[in-house]
Image (cartoon, rainbow, N blue to C red; front, side, top):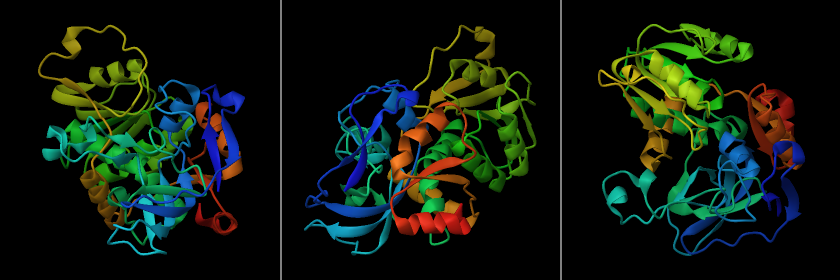
Length: 343
């Protein structure tokens, strides 16, 4: 199989991924092997490639938003058939026995492994994954449109839950990339009034087109917010969100890596305001979101690249030069679908 492999982190401008040929993966007893059609690019992939997120294993194949079709079944796998479509996301495995797993918080499992961090991910033409951590995808989304749902969509949905926003509430989204775009659509479906703050004029316009009540730069205040979610990996943005929060509101930080949080007055936190990080997601989160995405229905915006141009996708993500979520294509059929207008 062909894969993009990270051997040593370096800046995106230095093309940290190498195109290599590897042996096709053989599924273990509890795994399935997929022929990958598409894999969306996530900022976490960029942070891993550049070394902002410490590697757990090198070399590693990044990518954790993969869509493919079942090619082989491990001997103990039930419930899947060869040829069926499946989605692979960030959470690759848990032990199932720890206190967190037993209390519905498998996202915090101390033995959890993650796709593209601990296990080879979806920047490849094939991938082997645990069958009980693979997801069925809504029929209303083709392979390219489905890929961004598997991380940006799911983690954005969990962030809304962590923030405590209620239907009809007033929500702030600080930073507006792929995940925020999908979270905005969920919040609007819930009847929320959503205010977006982002430095990008292009993203401000996109937010308004998708139903935001207002969209402006981070320095422009919002009406008092019941809850907020930050998507930019910047401590300054967290403080900006906190500054606009109403009493008892929560800022949920949707980021696996964050730069320093600047000093701020306790007055911003007083009156039972809170800050919470968002760590991974549970399989229940993923199933709930995928069902919701189908019923709304969620609209994804994508920009396609062949697998061989994965470094270019990372470079453009790093420089904020993407028009939509980057999705890597693995074969001629997927490229033909993209050319036909599926993006």
